[in-house]
Length: 279
Image (cartoon, rainbow, N blue to C red; front, side, top):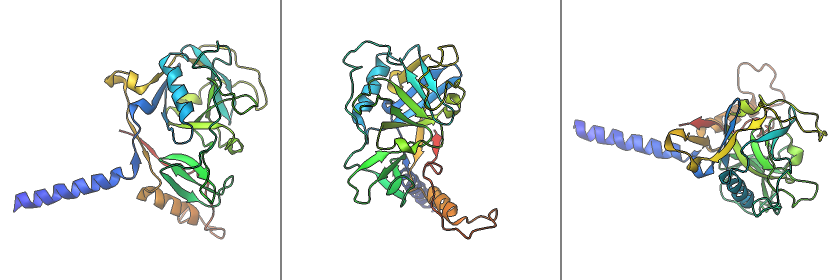
């Protein structure tokens, strides 16, 4: 009898585990970028859902050690931290201009959270990465939420090469559908916030390269020894905890709120991003 009960308990635990796995996205080491800075480590999960060629380029640059000893030369408070060589590099196969990948006509894994969004017909997530789409579902893009990674470019759209930026502020959504976005910080956003600021929003004056804004190295997780690898999972918006969080946010269903006249209210997906857990 005891063995039978124990077997049933195991089946129940397995079922719960399988159910929980349905609500998480676990990036592979080949999708994790380890950015070593003087103040610590920043880790970014890449997604090829919208900009696969930019992902491939970033991986090539990291594997070739292109970013070693470069710097975050443009760090604007409440906006972005932009890094790389600042255009001071030779033209090669892995530094040539890329064709823009701002949007994609179809994707798998989009989950709608808000309609309408402040800057889009509908917003939600693609496998845990904040994204938006049209009502006809004929165009998808990743959003400029805090912690998102994208390639910088010149005025013409097909001019991204090697420079990248991470969103620090809340949030430059005016850039949506105009930049190739392809990653989300899973650890170390506080490290990026320690970078020295340089100039203003419309300033092109770079920060002076010093020990504080140096990029020591950028490596892909699958190039690191197992002992140096870290493991994460990104909550999907279908997770019961996230659904409850959104419900409370929309309805102000908490004893703290004394005025609920405007509820249910719209929510900003950038403010209500899904959680990240280190395993």
